[in-house]
Image (cartoon, rainbow, N blue to C red):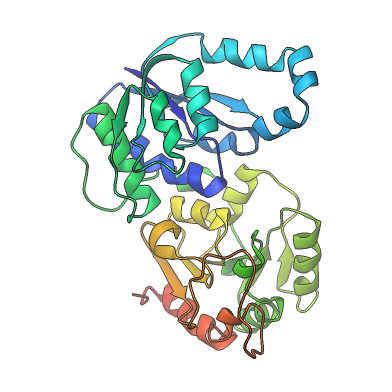
Length: 343
């Protein structure tokens, strides 16, 4: 049985899909997958042993350069690859109009979320099989349910298995216990204050830990450098791809992060992780798996799910919802995570 998956982005969403492949591979021996994914995340599907072919797309870039995309044959070549075989099942795991449009281009039985379950209900009209999956569940659980319904096997119980071989990711052996601080994210309301990151990094360094700081753009790079300058045990991870970041994460005794895609990679690699949440809700999209722990702000307006902070009262930090998640609170929770005592 050969199945095509449409799951384009983001990094966390792509990682959330992996346990469904593991479920299917165990329930249906011999099943194989191809996967359509945004080019920036094309490394991730290839790590799963049930995936044969990764079909990268660059929809955002293509939309900005429609004439060039057409004239260069980029779209035609991709469409030819997409239609090169007949699939026993096509699963649109994104539930958006753009992903449904790609599913429509492929040959095979199209499955996806019903209109009452999809993020964009009109996408459901493209599918020949539509499945209702309750919204008030974690994204990993919803995807596992969608695959089980589409492929016809009982939904497994228990924690997800992302199918990634952690110890094959790296041959690095750190000289001292290592922490990775995932400080970069998108929305302003997801950012734990830089002063807090600096305080936590210094506390960890003085306690004998090495702290590694990744970055994904120049703003994050500058912040990582400012933090790293404070102590010899703090260092910036050189520019690297997802494979390199996976290797760094695999060396860590624990990870601290905000709501960002890389914390989900740490979860998939079964690295003990502590994530701090203010404006967003970990119950639906937080890290999910073994040894994953969340600190959710109990600020009156959290989680607000807003990209910009609308709090008008006084506060000593920005965003205000992180006022109660101080360096001392996070450090105490991190020690419990490292010691295996966190609950």
